[in-house]
Amino acid sequence: MTDITWKKIERIHAALFGASGRTGPTGQDLPDWIGPIVAGETKCYKKFPGWLHEFMQQAEDNNRRWASMHPKDTQPRIPVVVMHQKGEPTLSDFVVIRLSDFLPLVEEKNASI
Image (tube, rainbow, N blue to C red; front, side, top):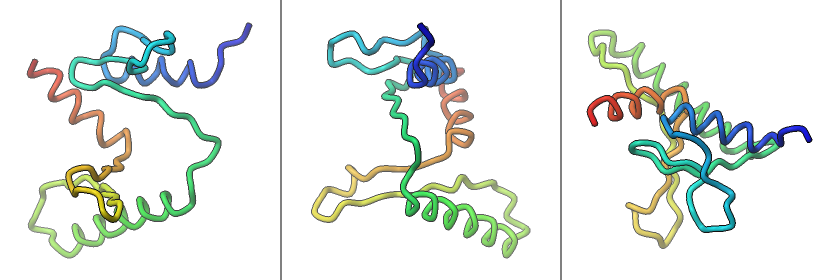
């Protein structure tokens, strides 16, 4: 039997986050994988909603534009999209970040453990 795409992606995510392997699905309500500082759920979609791509593109474009307007400020910034649901506490908001930007933060934290 060929490996199912989401299983492959779970394994890739587990490895990227320093997890020893997949934990799910086991029939229990547990994370898909456990790393030193991150407990993850891998979700696979054929296509993300267009608005999500637009929001991330806006964050990336505006980040580049800001950096070009402030050449003396050499601190790199990570573009993120913070999504708030009306009526919910602000600290329950979601932060969308590209994996390529998030992994160095996780690796740095993992190294300090």
